[in-house]
Length: 116
Image (cartoon, rainbow, N blue to C red):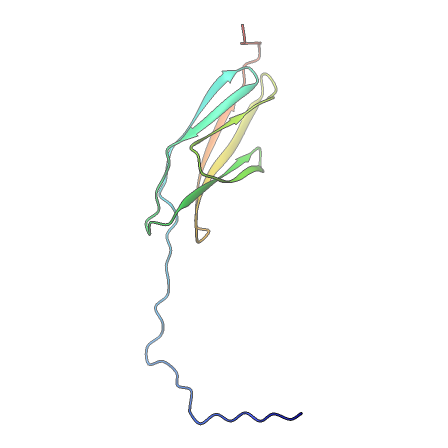
C-alpha cells in the first residue's frame, strides 16, 4: 500500500509569543509540636492556601525520609519514638502544579517515662 498526503496551506509563526504561565507556591504556614508522652509526638499545622486557588496537599518528612504523601488533614502523630532523642522534619505544602512551601519542625522526646 502506498499513501500520499498533501497539504495546501502554510504554517505561520504566531505574531506574539504565548504568555508564559507562572504558578506560585502555596502560602507560608506555621507548624507546632506537642509531646503526647515520652515516645509519641504530634505535629499540627495551619492549613494554607494557594495564590491561584489550587488545592493543597501535605507531605511529611521525618529525619530526612518521606513518611506520608498527599495528606489532606492538618496533623500527624509519630509513635514508637525513642526516649531522650532529638527529631526533626518538614511539612511540605504542595499545589496541583508541584509548587512547594516547606516548614521545618523539631522536638526532643522526654528521657524518662511520662505515662504515669
